[in-house]
Image (cartoon, rainbow over all chains, first blue to last red; front, side, top):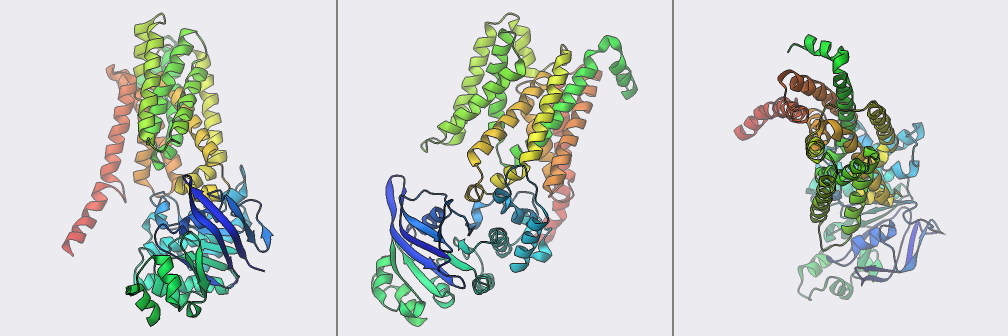
Length: 247
Length: 289
């Protein structure tokens, strides 16, 4: 049983078809990289899975069940700039907002909610900065707070949108270690990225997306240059293909 | 005039309007201070201004037909806010342009309506700049009850407002009804504005919404502290402003706003973490290294 299974997904944006017949699976324990050029529909795919866009067709299953309300059982980590970092809230306060929708109107967080928040912060190694205002955090710490917010709902699968963008090398490395350990910890993790060497090296599987899934599989089974040229629209002499050979 | 004389005037039965004005000014400042925290943190000062102006035609119509001012103002404010929300769906126009169109239109409608009402000149002046005389007793209750309703709604919906403010997409993804929460927040801003218009006036009311909350933001990084500090600052400035205006015979609304502004400027200079003084040594240290 796949933790996340997408089949035949089609999405329109502004009257134009952006995604056609997208099918992919992510299992628990697996870190999957979603790669493709700008405009390939990576963010659109994640947003549709979260119910922020209404697909024209297709099916999404989480843990083998068709989801009735989109986003159920999925934890979402949007791009860092979508968040109001100047808001006067502590780290734990932000992580608790991940549970706000689930709590329901008029209900205050209870002990179980706080436990989930502390667990999530522990998981991303941010527990010692629990009471720090989020405005004072570094880029890597902010990314981990957003990750903890997604984990606060104890999801089966995590969807991350460009978590590595704008982070320096050591921070990227820490984050990809963290994602891998979350995956091994029986989460299904799907992350978009522009860092192809990093993705080839770290991810268990890659999904090459350009309007639809061009190819998917473990990095060592994606040696063929054709799908990469099709996905990224590059010619044979491209540095991209040289990187592919080097890894 | 010494504060003792001010106290004496407050209990003087011949000056019964004075304690009433004080109560209304302080209560509405407290409510505006709390609601203003969302206005400041969401960067919706312009829509706050728009709603403040948009209540005017409602007040004018209610005045002309001798209806309930609060009800009239609220209906007009909410109608304008909804119009802005709906017209902003058209991607060709940005929200600030839509706001610019509708709040001036609403204000213009108010001017036309009130010019046809009897007692035009005096009441226009009163609506625009506020007045401390002529507050009927029942207004005290209306302001108190409306204020409690607004504060109660804030208390109940606080965590939703926070979630929507820090990350709209995520709020929507976790199942919050973002559009309706926006409308509720606009209604709360409108109510806070309507109960304040009486004493401080239509044009100056924006200061009650924005200045105390902005001052509080300079003084703290904690939302809970900010939401206590803002109404305290607003309420005290209303008290001091009324005292100053009574002593020197200044217009009340304008004086309260100037006191608020003075407190804001002081906080700008002296705030422990974000103030000018606190930042200066740090900046010097940075340029030295």
